[in-house]
Amino acid sequence: MCTQAVGLAAAELERRGIATVAIQLLRRVAERVRPPRALCVPFRHGYPLDVPGDPARQTAVIEAALRLLEAPDSRPPLLADYRVAAGGPARMREDRS
Amino acid sequence: MGDLAEFSPAVRLFLKAYPWRRIDPVPWSPLRKPLAVCRLALVSSAGFVLPGQEPFDAAVRGGDVSFRDIPSDADAASLVDTHRSRSFDHAGIRSDPNLALPLDRARELLAAGRIGSLNRRHLSFMGSITAPGRLVRDSAPRAARGLSEDGVDVALLIPV
Image (cartoon, rainbow over all chains, first blue to last red; front, top):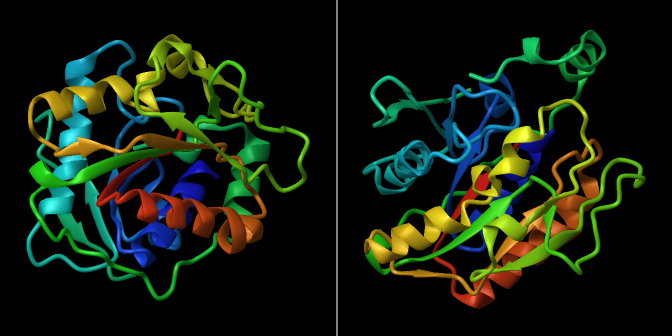
């Protein structure tokens, strides 16, 4: 439910001219809801930025999300997957579903 | 990836049958200037409130679609988890609220020059919203209007 809520909120922000990137915990839901720009992370619910008390791991996820904002020639909906092993960067994959 | 297997059989069944709200057409605002000069706002759906703020109402049918302003200089450790869901482990966000509303990480990005400024406030929703009509019609547009009036350029949204 949280994944849907932030996706819908992101859409309203985009309509107001604010560029957004949303963390997503369930790719199958992100594919259905279609937030404008999203980073799917491989973490369980309750842990959207990876490890509590670990600033470096949290910053790595946030950095990957920010890089989606900077991705050239992208178009909506933009879904990318976060790879933990590399600590980012996110792998870009456009979704036209 | 978060997976439906995390949830109880009843929750999995609900999520599989749930009519997810599809965004169509998908709005799009490209980044218009370097992040180093952009103003950032955080939007979390973790149900955080600050001491003295009204907790989210777990009894609202379909979900509480209200939101709270979290001042940018708030102490992350003071955030209180009032999310009603029992379908996820709350231990992480209770031990380190930065996990879902990264106030400290945002301040570090600012100090490093990665972003230009932090908005004066961030927003906290409670994402357990099964009936999102009021979110789409009322509170999300109101939140977006407020952040736009604040001069926010970019937003990072974090669910739990």
